[in-house]
Image 1 (cartoon, helix red, strand yellow):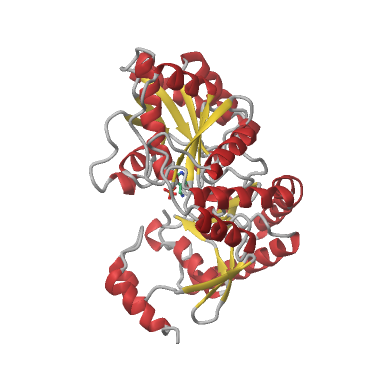
Image 2 (spheres, rainbow, N blue to C red; image 1 turned 120 degrees about the horizontal axis):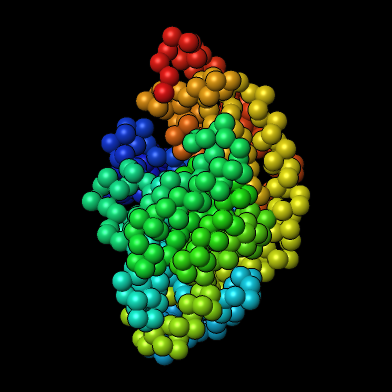
Length: 464
Ligand code: PMP
């Protein structure tokens, strides 16, 4: 007999330390126990059916319950469950997958370095770009420029590359050699400025930083094409072409972290080129296996690969699970499925525009400001008075209140401060999106009623 919810919760709080969790507060209410998933829905142990508006953690691109991925894993486990790629050995799924991913990334790329996560992949990037410049006789070129409110992972290098103040505050981070510029958040930083002009200005902060550090010391710039965990920050369309121009001007490498954006989420296999950038390295993870099994990596452009392979000697770096045959076999089956179901085109041409229409219509809701989408990600800000851009007092945690109403109404939506974000599975049909947005509106109404009843919409109540 399966254990009761309370029994699982008791084990959970006694022994399981969660990521990004205040355990004392969790123990007081008990974790929600997830039990199964099918399509775009997940169920908890109390039988609640919940629309997964976040695709797990931005990863379950093909939705839940896809037997083909189970079969691919089972078959590979029977044939060869594991072997390493350290000692001049390789395996068939890893080689096939590397070729396939290079093909999706385009002509400028030739190789893939595999890991098991986005964080590890970004650590690989740091090692790789420093080794690249050292091989070229410029070891002093070791500074990597990133952005505030970026998310690049939770390992020491991943956190350091990321620009999350709360993460940096724990453990004396970032590590030396990683510096940050402001993010291209138009709505948050300069809502009254022309959007395209702001994009150029925000990219210009990179050039300012390069000059401050010294161009001869800068190895690379890293950025997510659309910032995910930072709250779905969609840059103006002028931003990435200008970033590329600046990288070219100073000869610095460009790393695009497509851990969220890749594999169809924004309506392209990889999204950087579509946005006007030509990265030398692309970080991937999540959607490559639709989250069914851990896998990540770096797609390596010829500019870097040629130097490392021809002149770099041994690259003293790698993971036990680099090129894991089962993970690679699942990824191949997952990419087959995305291709066969035409999910990338569907997001770009059909479901993405449909989601965008719904988001545009949300502006009639009194709480919602700045709603925007890109492919299958979207975000908006909950505001006390959007007519004068008046935010709520941050200590009220309005985003978390809204998120709780979402769970209570059968919807997973994530809160980043007062920004509410969605990233539904790419298999969503238009009808699924209609259903999700119906729930979004129910949750927004419930949130409004809740905060009105607490008096927090009153002019007298402090704003943030
Ligand atoms: N980069 C980006 C852009 C991400 O969104 C994430 C995870 N949300 C990571 C890196 C880290 O990936 P992981 O949690 O697999 O280490």
